[in-house]
Length: 217
Image (cartoon, rainbow, N blue to C red; front, side, top):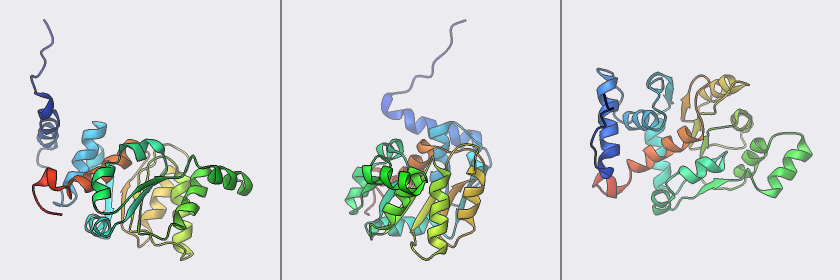
């Protein structure tokens, strides 16, 4: 018997995907502001564990959207995440996306201080003197550095998206961020990745994009 394919027009694929996600979630309910983020992460990963793993603290979604409206920039720890974030929508509010991981001065600082580039890139980001959202999808050392700088009073992020993936210090670094008073969206456990970090950023941005919502900014 030949495998049957669902006939869906190209422009309808995303809509149909979200319909399937909603169907498979069944009776699961989420706060209205969190639901688009949870579903977009599931859409990106095809992993329904995120319905339970994603944690939102301190009114994170509202705070993040207000920060974006004020021109907040997004700092990521991978070029992959930077590439995946919708820069058009962010720029419409005056924001930019940064990733300093490949910068020569970051490599030099990491070598000099015997630390990781992710740690050094967080130090560089702290000097931007702009409202910042951090989207960490790869390096737990970036989250640890952010935690340390928050405790030292050196930085007050608007939002931390903490979704690094892996095994070494990944779980602990996420828990450190949840201990702070900074609004956060964290994927508890080992799962995450640059694609998840970008998906969360885009979920926020798409909810603010008039071309998608039909509403004003």
